[in-house]
Image 1 (cartoon, one colour):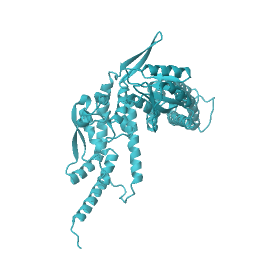
Image 2: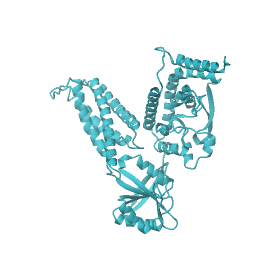
Image 3: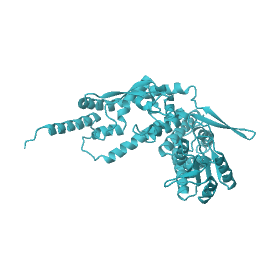
Image 4: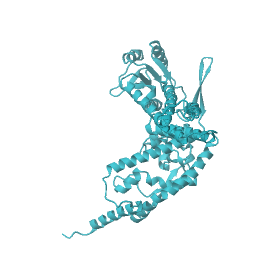
Length: 482
């Protein structure tokens, strides 16, 4: 299966934009005057342009800055490009500080802003062009042979990767009698194996993928041979194959393909680094969270007699611990508007910073499930227990919450476990901030404006809200005068 080479074009566009950003920087910093004879505007800044091109080339390879890894999402694009440009600018500003000759720090700042905006624009434009190709039907038409979890997972991943320029038009399910059943929306039709090739040709299929959980039948191998004769590209998922938590490496031994499955493992220092970040950043976030949690906890203590609750959860290796959260039910269809806001903005989960500081949880990782739910895990889902659970994770920034199925969340959690890195953690934290900001804006648009004293604190707003609710409740409980 040949993947569309979008990343090379994006890298070339990035390098071209580096030069354009350099020209724009000189124009902004020096009043739109380009003077090649001016040593300050050219010779002193040109080494930074060359350094930017070299550094960005290596950053793109290391961080996979085409931003299509894991599926194209705009918040992920912004967070990854932001981290890469931040790293680049730290190097450039440090070099500018150590440079013996004068270099305008303001010019370097302009350069960084232009780079960030341009790189985002390049990736967004690439996404629009790919979507245009899909709408125009200029895509490879693919059929998957198989109907189990591996086939479904392959279809989902291809759908989330527009850079492959592929469209799944159907599935073929092999049966014990040697026939193939097309599985598409609508009624299934039994087709003899000899007629499948004609069916694929009539549907203008360009790719056939064998995604079988058991060894291929002779009929399937014959089908693959006939498809190749007719110009249909054939790919397959080797068996046996663990879909997750293994990094395949293809070895060509004199024409014999050998697929080596390597265990996914984080660098030796990653666990120590992750724990240091949890303690430092968790302590900082705890200080910031106190002004938010204090009035909310007082209000909950007043109305519900208890501000916090402890829920039993399973951590790394299935070890149970008590997770701290605000005393608000997750299912709040009948709850107050204020409680719905707390759950929607994930304020109820802020007390788990205490679990992070205790070492029971991490800032980033799979969300912990209850022992009852863990007991129903399949062998595939149990791999989520391989690392410490987190307050946020890849599944959460994709919009999955506690009410979503474990299988949906496992798909993203194992993707995170397979590629652990400090950059991934930082990107997920930035995407979480994006998600919470988006929810806050959506909530403010849905909620009608209410009169409030300018500059009122959160404590006074929460107290007023609960006073109003209790007064209304007391009024309803009084006997009628009629």
